[in-house]
Image (spheres, rainbow, N blue to C red):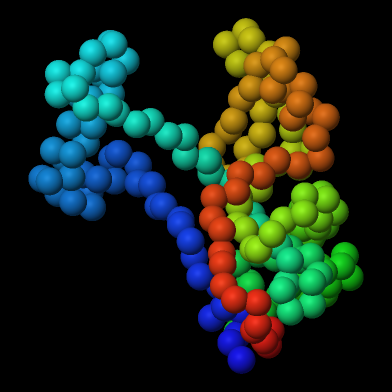
Length: 193
């Protein structure tokens, strides 16, 4: 039998570097890559590209905590967890009592209980990982440069949504927000330690 950690195979999890890190990580080559990217971005925003190549822009979401959720194929039960699902003593949380035992810290405990309640409604197949962006208690109204925003700060970045937008209304009426980015796959027979 395989352990939970051996069972899971990461399907795709791209690590995105900040552009300034390319300079520090890769020296002269990284600097060239950063300059070429910025030139391409400039051309794209200006509506032209000298090389004819398309520049792709993505948003890097920076949430916390990392949430793992899915159905344990061995018992068919839905669970949530943190990166602790990969430790020797696997911490899968099927109930609020499991969360109390495995994650007693007040903030994480509350967030995991909300994740357990809300994500269990999604009928998730397999195991997925995401970054929690907010729970309703994290949302704040702020004025920035004279404009009203709905804000939340899950980690290091403050996200600001115009207060009167449809997105802000949708976020305000939700209990949590999460950005899923990785799916884990494997066969259905494994043993959880």
